[in-house]
Image (cartoon, rainbow, N blue to C red; front, top):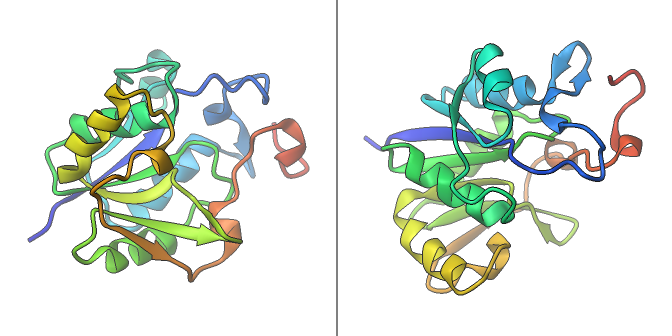
Length: 186
């Protein structure tokens, strides 16, 4: 049986937002809790939170793991997530998803097949911070990282990528700036 873990990336600087995105509340729930809930509701276990403020993450009841490459972009966070668990597959979500969905997570897993990564594509753009990665891809990602790559899309040499086109675009919408937040978010 294939084992699956979940990871929420929370280590970004949030410079455009002006405050940590993980702890912004939407409809009474933090964005971090919403991402973790999507993984939990998709029957993913264990779930780790990569990077961010360790004390606040642990106080919120989540398992924190350090980002081994803080400030080095999302590829470092993905590599940290893959190295933090001992499962076959890791579903990686960003902490700033406004409407993270367990259905989106299960569709990624169902689509992965023999691929190394399953990534949703919305309006022609791959959503790399909402993808299912085989842990066996870690070596190729580390090689690309050592060459200076910091974006997941630039680290795919030799990896089989499965693009997933179904699903609601709202499942993948993130909040980068205060104007991206729905009314009433705090």
